[in-house]
Length: 461
Image 1 (cartoon, rainbow, N blue to C red):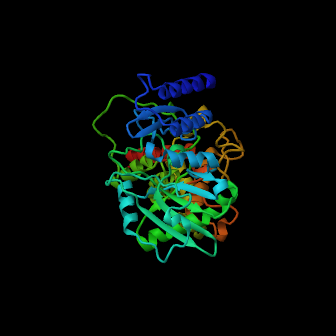
Image 2 (cartoon, rainbow, N blue to C red):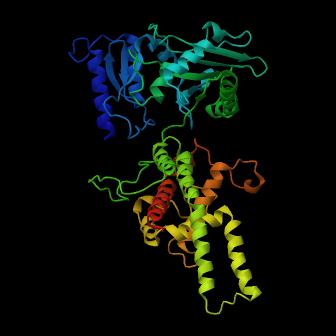
Image 3 (tube, helix red, strand yellow):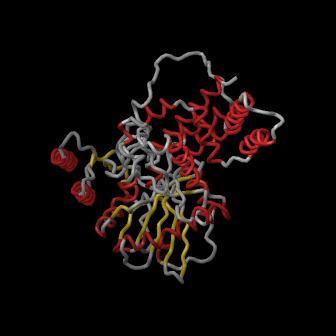
């Protein structure tokens, strides 16, 4: 199969190079031909020229999210930047290990794509144009004499924003500017770049001043990038972030787990508007799995008091209905008092367990864990560390207790900081991490619990 794809890529390449071919479009320059051949050899297929751009297939690590349209798979780079791309390829371009970006070890160069938090790309571009470097930047990159491979656009709507800063003590400099051709080629899904209507994405470039391994540069860059973006947010009002490579998880939503009805009805479920908002938001937070999980957990939290009260009332009622109960007996009265005290002072973990016991149907939980797509996710060796395992066949621990314990511990890993002494043995579960990418089965579990609790609220008198 790979040989067939490679043959097809080379065929397209040769057709584009052949000036007489009707499919070739504009004639390719010698540099463009060499770039196309080099990338084809590295399994990045050349799709041909299109106007002022060259089109390529997305890099293999840019697995396309299901939510994006499949209409335009081509990654486009400006033909005017092909010489920069040739230079980058000659020096040796490597993808970064975790963050969407590239590294060029021979040049001591690291480049990471930037994304806006709550802003359009154009807004991020505009903010950069308004910012000015504090102090004089004394390095050759500031004058464009060295390896500053930022894509240059002639379109005034796009422009060429640039912010360049240097640190003589650390012997490095950083730059925010248009992404380089190689960075766009390696980090684009294929439909995010339109040179006619949109803005070229920005990237953060770090020049280390000397050749260095990718691993060493990434290790140094982690604190530099996080500190720089923090100050841009707090000092300058520019909210930007980096992103990880797309998750290797094949499907975040397990198709077939729940029956989907094709018939729509007038709503019969009465849901608190705030809970409906949280439930809907949880389903939309696909780029932030921990936030999606917490939103479903907040739905559960809302119903804690009612479930605990209902459980306490049932126990009190049982005590009062006991024919041996004697209202004149101090011990009997103390038992009633202790039930009330326990319900008022119950720990959050205990309240969660009570909620699940009171509101979630056992058969629904058992059915959930029979779904084959979970594939050992909840068992020993699963991807989420520091949380309880779930074995529905464990005779020593009820399934409800196992589920409550796991859900609560995941919640703690998300909301508690690493330096909290109560949780020092378990690191925080961060949004951009392998564990976050693998959290979706637990999110589906939290979603099931939330929907069961909402259903139970419809039948509670």
